[in-house]
Amino acid sequence: MRFYYYITILFVFTLSTNSFSQEIKWISLEDAVYLQEAAPRNIIIDMYTNWCGPCKLLDRNTFANKDVAKYINDNFYAVKFNAEGNDVVNFKGYTFENPNYDPARANRRNSSHQLSQAFRIQAFPTIVFLDKSSNLLHKLRGYKTPKQLEVYLKLFTDENYKKYQSQEDFNKFFESFVYEFGSK
Image 1 (cartoon, rainbow, N blue to C red):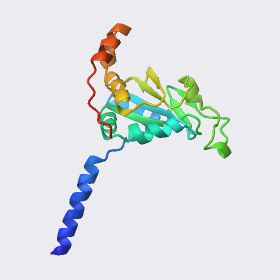
Image 2 (image 1 turned 90 degrees about the vertical axis):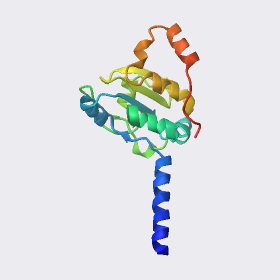
Image 3 (image 1 turned 30 degrees about the horizontal axis):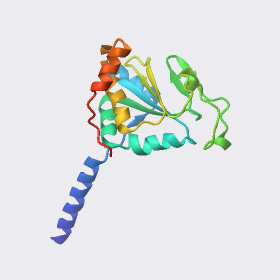
Image 4 (image 1 turned 45 degrees about the horizontal axis):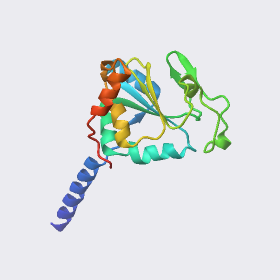
């Protein structure tokens, strides 16, 4: 009888732990574009490098936040892309690669991937937002806290961004924004 009691407690603990922790479901850019055909969503791309300290902070502090992870999983296709890696990517009819990639420098500064060049990424991390047709909406440079990122996540969910036609409209949106994400 005691054995079943411990099994039950273990089962409940496992369920409660899983319900509180959430991770972003990262997929490839090709998979995100493919999924857009059947179920259109905007795409969020985390452009990072292995050597980038702020990129690691973004992973640890922002993308690990349960509210951020849940919101991204519910509203976007999430792509994590090493902007100096050696993946071959097919996107919008073009093949992007990193012909000067040096495996000996995998965890140090390496050559820039052609996809990051196509998006004109100049700093890391950069979060790229694409619309439901995989067209560039916005590039958000630098480390962002969960609350700082929340504004942009909600702005670029579906077609919310189309409501704001001027800088003044965006400033009103930003000033009246009500934050909902927690800090953990």
